[in-house]
Structure formats: structure tokens, C-alpha cells
Length: 98
View 1 (cartoon, rainbow, N blue to C red):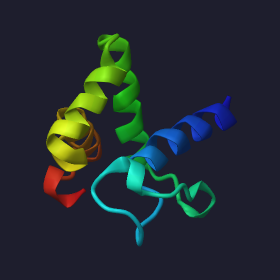
View 2: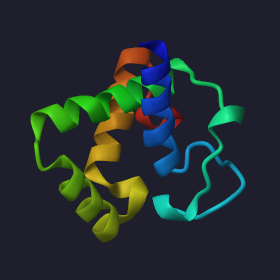
View 3: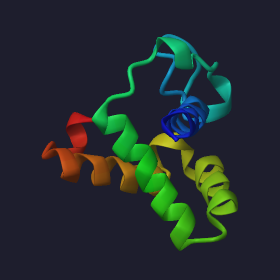
View 4: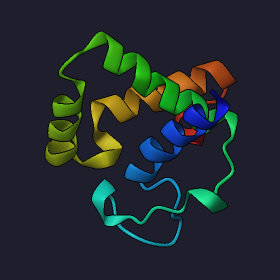
């Protein structure tokens, strides 16, 4: 079970470019996957867990997420903003700190 959770977090976060600090731009598809070198911390896991919640609440999540990314970019994607706020609220940090 732990491997599945780590693999899912790796897949979501790599698509968002969280693994590669030095490469790619603001668009998720511009980044390379570097799961093996990334620490899975509480902030990242909570962020990805929020995406699971979003998917369960909105069956059109994959299409809507892509539309948000194309229209607004990764940083201003409403689902990403929500996920950052969710993890910040759980960790007691401000959204701007993440």
C-alpha cells in the first residue's frame, strides 16, 4: 500500500514539476520526472491528497484540471491554489510560504 501512495504522489507531483527544481517552466509538461531524488514531505503529500479529494468530488476533474492549466497556468490553476491552501491550513503555514 505504501508503494502505491508514493507512486501516486510521484506521478502527480512529477506532472506538476515539483521534482525538478532546475528544469522546465511554469507548464507541467515542460518538466522532467525526478522522483528518486525528491523527499516526500508532509506538505507535498497533503497537497497531492487534496488532488485526490478534488478528483473524488468532481468526476470531470482531469479535464477541468487540464483546462485550468492551459487557461491560467500551473500557479494560478484553481485546483493548485486550493491544494496549496489545503496543505498550508493543515500544516499551519501561510499559502505564500509554500
